[in-house]
Length: 425
Image (tube, rainbow, N blue to C red; front, side):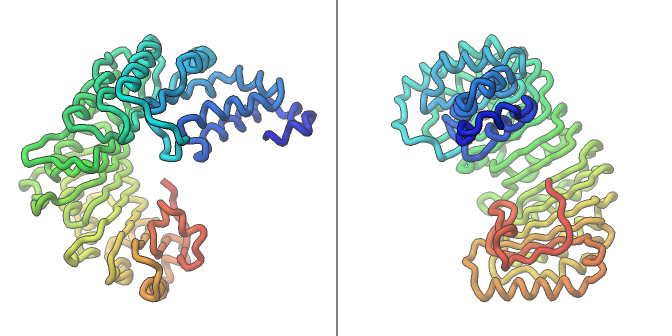
């Protein structure tokens, strides 16, 4: 874009609608997801030429994304006021914290500076609380708990357009619960993403976070809090309006096991269409079979390695057999430690042929080696025994040394085998 200054005629002729899309791409580019990025990019595109500056200034959406980096004391209040003024009446997307660890090298501020700065930011933003549409809080190690405590005292009942909240926290559990209790008062909140401090572990008798809006949530993403299975069963039973649910961190704690529910204990989620669970399969089996979801379309398991060998595919078969309605799309990601799970057994599960689209991913953190190469060959051989699924393009198989959906390795590593079609979720 900066090179465009050399040919101003071409850039001057670009329609304003196209320029707005260019600005939108720049705003969401991951390379600019750092404390100063979103402010710098608007300044950059505005400096191309006068027309670009006029288009950027008049596009209220671009100025409605407010990013406050507390630990950097950025942006300065005059810049924040400029963005809010140029956003006109467009709904505000508020982010508090670091979007990326690749922020600029700058000395961190003192505790008093952080608190004083954030108090002034809140004093400016709270009159616009009725315009908040999304709120993301990304707590870095250097962000004070005092910042979160200030948020607890906000009256979110006045946030009449707040639809989405994302919390990535490293704080104490009582502050986390207080924050959720406050935010849950937002009257139209529909999506909640909560990633708790991975170092927090619930003790016996702990409870699901207090949150007054579980029954109104349509999208729930709950990660990394190592709470017991029965607590999550209590949580999911509250999400009666949920359309998509993602739960991560379902683990045994100090040798305790996930106890199955008492006979007849089930929960109905009539609106649920997509469910993504991350844990070991022996914990997921009683959890998944205790739920009733007549409209399920997508079922996604991310299976963690276990110290003891489990009858992996037998448990999967049990889960599918007990489901009243099979999903249209089944996705199974297996993080394995050698010896690897047998792919042949996966395709022998009797319910697999009745599911239109199946995707299996096997990945490991071990270094690429002849053993992993042997796994690739074994997987190809296993899949070739089921030519019907291949010709119908119903199956996709990934095998490799890292999670392909996280690392993108299936796109650039020729050793990874890829068959059929996939569904991006």
